[in-house]
Length: 196
Image (cartoon, rainbow, N blue to C red; front, side, top):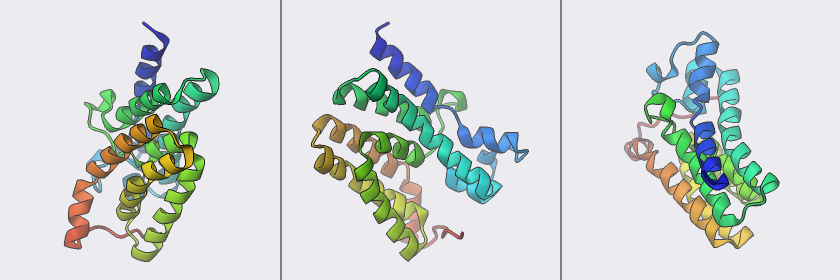
């Protein structure tokens, strides 16, 4: 097994760690999949188990994206195309985790971790858009979808790398696709608003 193949497998398995499920169970909160929206991500954990666990889930899910990509770039010195594959493996692990029967989260936090390593400046631009939309409309999903839609083009503009643009485009498209229920609720006016 080549080093890249092994790294892709490990990246997937790291991405597949169900942070929100583990944290809520350890805190005695039961299975987060049985409450709220049923999602394993930070937003549902926040609503179901409180701010502290929500923030920890966000950090843990982001770290699942940071670690494999940072290892690929800083330790192994892989090129953009190979790094993009590592990023995709970690992201797919979160969305389709083997530990949960391939039923995972929407990928926003893990994508954030990946993008922070690939292009911090692009993340800043996308975050400003997210924050503005959240402040104005109070929908986390709207901010997440909008930030995901714009970040591949920011990566292309800032980094000038077609392989990274392609990887971030695929990740972002999957983030938007996995929010299709939220999009329907936004259009119907039934989406839950964020309350701090």
